[in-house]
Length: 368
Image (tube, rainbow, N blue to C red; front, top):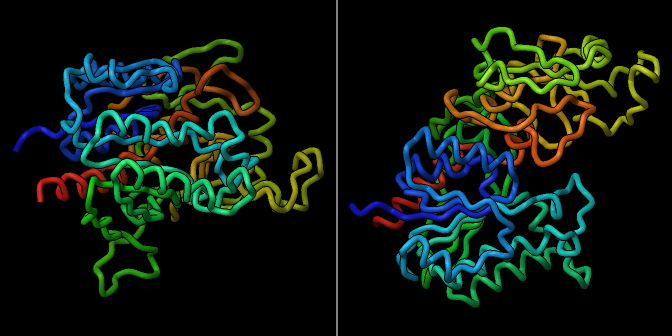
């Protein structure tokens, strides 16, 4: 079989790329604007000794015809064009500004590239809020309809499905929409789930029980501590604790599997004036369950220790291999940094095992 060729857009820390490569694709190029994510991607290329070209650039300024020349490929030769554009404009937890957000129109960049490359398959990942996001006329679901129409205009037939990462062996209840569009006809079938909640197994379909937080973070040992005011990377695996002393006090008051706002017996200063709806802020995970969705705005508590989870623990929950290294700062809970810190690189990415399952289904579809 000939090697399958792919190009990655909005590559981030490379979570989707990892799964696609494991599924048997050669990623010719990766496009990403974030400085630290690009460092992460280049380190992976060097470690894996691949020929992937990392383009650190604003994708809106890229001329696809020049990329075709630089990669020495012709239209119709590309097997897969894939990516996960920024989700903030469509996230149900955000402001839901849609296309009026400067990042909103980036959704359609994958279609602009597809017009030139004419790949056999297009794969897009996005938050489920895309399905109901309002267009400029206020029509619910209007943006999604526009996107599907644009795909069809350039000759692609799309299928989509809301996938939960936990259903495919990732210890995280993360729901995302995946769109798979193929040229002319679409016989692609999304892979069936392999895992289910513990109480629903074993069952007629032979599902395995959900993988839990405790299953994956065990065995890492004590994390290093980040020195205040100094950026250190004495642990290349990212197993670094950045918890401020006052937050340790707050964390100590939260039972496993609960959150700070629920501890109404505490004084307001300690509870930070949180509202009852703040169920994910200052959340302590449960060892016996999958994690909540890892998000950029918060860092979850360790199930039993009075600290935030480290970037390496986030990577374990997301399904990254232990030899995968992130670059960039490790931000404290209250700190700010330019570009993406390591926790947010993970939270923004597609879990590699889920990307692999979908990528493998695409590979089989192409070969069949």
